[in-house]
Image 1 (cartoon, one colour):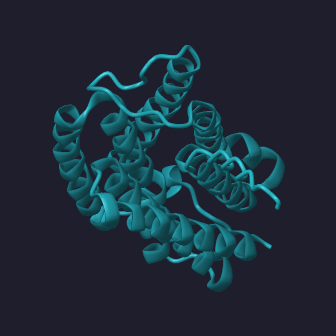
Image 2 (cartoon, rainbow, N blue to C red):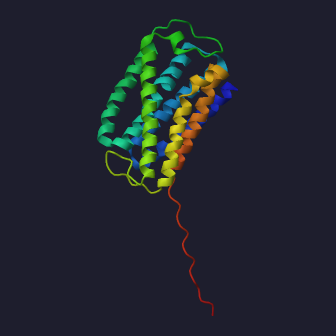
Image 3 (cartoon, helix red, strand yellow):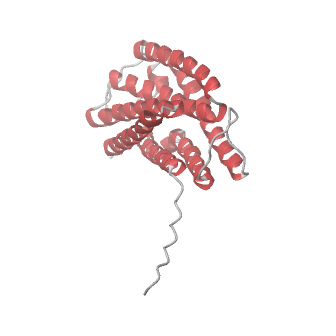
Length: 245
């Protein structure tokens, strides 16, 4: 069951990633590229979980899962929020800091010494395997980035609901305010779900909690993206009146 849940999360993340990649290739908007990078990392982390739940945990699978899933994917998703709300100038500055953080994470998590071997069918924790540096990266990367996403989504929904422009870095064209409000609420909910694995771990176990929250969280995020980015409905053209001889 855990492997099936991780496989489903991987496939949803890949579909989500291809959707944002297609939009970036067509429009070249920086927030869509940030989302694409985040979702590619999300898919990589889910794939590592899928492999580990199917074939057993190894140090390599845990390093990939920890790097892509616990540290990097949420900050890149938050970068998209920064671009949308603060504008490209601020977003570009944050992007270079995030590029530096990503390189630092690959170096530290990829080569950090371990305190215990990784094997078996039960997911280890970062505290059991790593020292302080990888765990600080995970806490800062995921924690701060999740706050940015949730606060940004709620702020954007509130501003649009009040009839105001949500961006602080310039005007954004809002064609479907109702959809944008609901989309942002779904994005905030999906981020909260992804952050809730620790709460569920006591009831479901670590492996099941991570698998469930990965799948439910990415599905809710994808729904939020689809709702927020859907074009407004076109009004049906009035039928032509024809005279009958």
